[in-house]
Amino acid sequence: MNGRGGTVAAITVVALSAMYIVLLTSVMSLVRAGLVSTPFGQGETADLVLGILGSAFLIVALIVATVVVTNAFVLVTASRVQQIALRRLLGASASAERSRIAREGLRLSLGASALGIGLGAAAAFGIFALGAQNEGMFEGATAGDLVNPLVVVPLLALQVCTVVAAWRGSAAVLSAEPVQALGLAATQHAGGSDDLKLGRTATAALVTGLALLGLTFVAGMVTPLAAFLGVLAGTVMAVGVLAGARGFVPRIVRVLAAALPRTGPASLARRTLAEHPARTARAALGVLIGVAVVSMFVVATASANLSLAIEYRDTTLADQADDVLLSVLAIISALIGFVVLIAAVGLATTVALNTRLRSREIAVTRILGQSRRDAATAVVIEAAVLSVAASVSGLALGTLLGWVGAQSILGVALTSRIVVPMIPWPLIVLVLITALVLTVLSSIAPTRFVLADSPVRAFARA
Image (cartoon, rainbow, N blue to C red; front, top):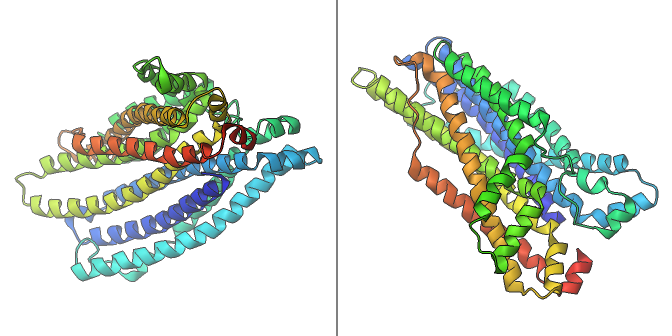
């Protein structure tokens, strides 16, 4: 994948995110209007829960989109390093070049968002029309409920996130001196030397996030307002993980890589992973975020479903509760599918970026005698190790956030005051296997691109 691939990835993610935002706000409005006609929609609690749930979905989507678009613009910038270096040699400043890329990000975001808004509005109307025919969850809702003026807020937030992502994505190459950039094209670390560092900020965010999650769990036994604290706790944890990935991800990778053979392509993959911890963390983030998001929603919905089934078992509302739960779970599953799609694009972009930025290293090993097959095998092994390490981290994070999230919303409504944790292992295993397969497959195309030329030509092109 080259710079054009990064641009396509950014456009795809922004368009999907805008579509997701419009679809989410419209569907939540329809669900809110439909719930009013059921015993579960009476009072302010249901409205509060839906508002919190919608906010959580929006925040997750914005975080995932920001990470993906950042990586996409790292790829775009890396592919243009020689052009940027020439302009800097002619007097252009680093800030001017970064501003140029940020403006490009804004133009890209506005165009892609317009496309996404149109698609989202059409999809929301289609869902409403289908629901109206079946007289199900949306019974009592009208077409006017599709329009939510508050949708402007997350859409504006998406534009800001895209511009920030474009600015951050341009940091690594533009921090180099012009002459260095000309000589080290595509070999700079993605994100800058201070990116993803496990420093005081990351440690403070992780500790604060864990403390807030514990407080959220307890507060969930008393009031559904605890969910607001849960959203804050999850956001702080996400910031800590993103900032501290460079510290803990390479350690997990090191443990897994210890099982690799000491000779052949596996040895090269092991050495590469150990020598570039920052790049390793960057490459793993796409998988980690994707698995964490999916695990969080899967565990949260499974735990909520089990706890509510136990709560209403052998009551007159059991059948109606099952119908409402099935409808809500169907909607949530569709929304999760959008986030998964965004995360999958990010995974492919991140793996492609990792391979693109080490093209010169691969060329050097080939000049020293390594065959194309061994070079490709080393890249695939490296991608597999990264996927497993990131998936384990994402599963742990997502399970914790999912259980606490369900507790914060439903704890006060249960007789036991505690949501029963439920981890649907068959589905989780499927997620992990899918992440592994996608990671390996995503490494094939950029690897073939790097290995297409002779070693000397590949070195010069890198």
